[in-house]
Image 1 (cartoon, helix red, strand yellow):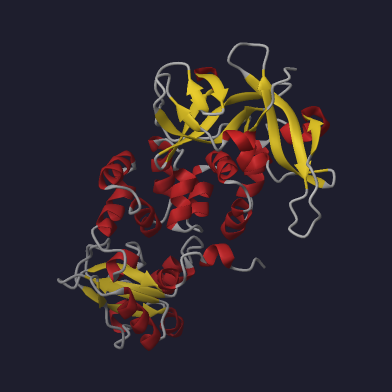
Image 2: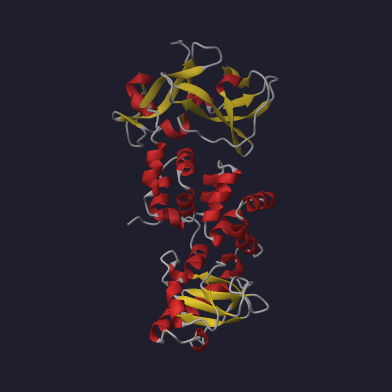
Amino acid sequence: MSDRIVYASRLTRLPLVGADGADIGRVVDVVLDLGGRPPRVNGFVVAVGRRRVFVGGGRVGEIENEGVRLRRGSVNLRQFVLRQGERLVIGELFGRRVRSDRVVDVGLTPAPEPFAWEVATLALGSRGLTSRRRSPEVIDWSEAGELFADERSVDRQAAALGGLHPAEMAAALRRLPLSRRRVLASALEDDRLADLLEELSEDEQVRLVEGLDQERLARVLDEMEADDAADLLGEFPASRQAELLGAMDPEEAEPVRRLLVYEPDTAGGLMTPEPVILAPHATVAEALARIRDPDLPVPLAVQVFVCQPPLETPTGRYQGVVGIQRLLREAPSKPLARCLDEEWDSIAAEASDREVAERLAAYDVVALPVTDASKRLVGAVTIDDVLDRMLPADWRATRVSR
C-alpha cells in the first residue's frame, strides 16, 4: 500500500478542474466498486451547477490541494445514477457503525495501476454531541470488511420491498440514502413502482425516477392512476412531458393529457378522469356489480355517476349521482334514472381546490362530479385528492407508522 492517503472528507471540499485548469464543478462524493479487494474507486460524483454527474476514476490525473484535475477531455453531463455493486463513500459509508464507533472518514490510496485509487483505511469516531472529544481511530479497511460486502441481493431486497403495502414501502425507502432508493426502485416491477410513487410527494417522485430511462418511466406511468401520473408529469418541463406522453400507451396517455390542461389547484387538476359511469337505463344490479370491483379505490366505489352516452369522459350530458346506500335500498331491476339523488350538484372543472373542499364538507360526501361548460362529466374529485392538496407537503414523510 502507498504511504499517501487522501481522505474522502478532504476530497469533497475540492473543485474539479479541467486539464487546462478551468473550474468544472465540485467533488461531492466518491463511488466505490465493491467487487475489488481492496475496494476500488470507480469514480467521483461531481456537482456541475444543479446536476450531479459521474467522472470515472481513470479520467482523473492528479488529486492536489488545489483540486482534482482531469487528465483530458470534458465531462458527460448525464445525471449520475448509482449502479448495482457500487457504494457511495459520503452518502452511504459515513455514519455506519463499526464496533462501538462510527465511520467518520475513509482514506484512499493510489492503486498499483496508473490513475487508479483504492480504499486503504477507515477513521472511526463518536458522533455524539455530548461525548468527550478524542482523535479518530484509524483502522485498515479489512477490519470492517462487512461494510464493503457486495449487495448482490438487490433483487431479494426489492422483492421484500414489493411485498409491503405501498405506504410501508414508502416509509422503508425514506430511511435509505437517495442513491440506494433509486437502485431498489429500479429493481421493482412496474406496477409496484407505480404503487410506491403514488405514496410519495411529487418532489420525492422526481428524485426517485431521475435515473430511469424514458421507456421504463413511460411503462410505470402507464401503471399509475391517471391523476397521479398527471401530477408527476406536471413536475417536468413541457418538452419532457411530450416525450413521455408519446412513449406511453396511447389509451393510458389520453386521460393524462386531458388532466394536464387544468391548473393543479383546480377541480380539474385534482380529479380522476375514470369514475364509475353508467347510462340512465342501466339497472341497480348493474351498478352494484360495477362497484364491487376490488381494484376500485374506496372513494370511487361509493357512488355511480349517471350520464348520457358516451360513457367515457368527457361523457354525454351529466344526469346525476346514485350513492351506494340508495342502491342497497332499491330493487335490482330499477333503472338508475329513477334513483338519482337530487341534492348533488356538479362542480365546475375551473373551481378552486378550496371550493372543492367546501363543497365536499357541505354535502358530507367523499367524491364530487366535475363537469365542463357543456355539462359533460369530465371526472370526479375524491376526498383523498383534496386532503393531499390541503395537508403540508411533507405529511407523508412525517406520519406515524402503525
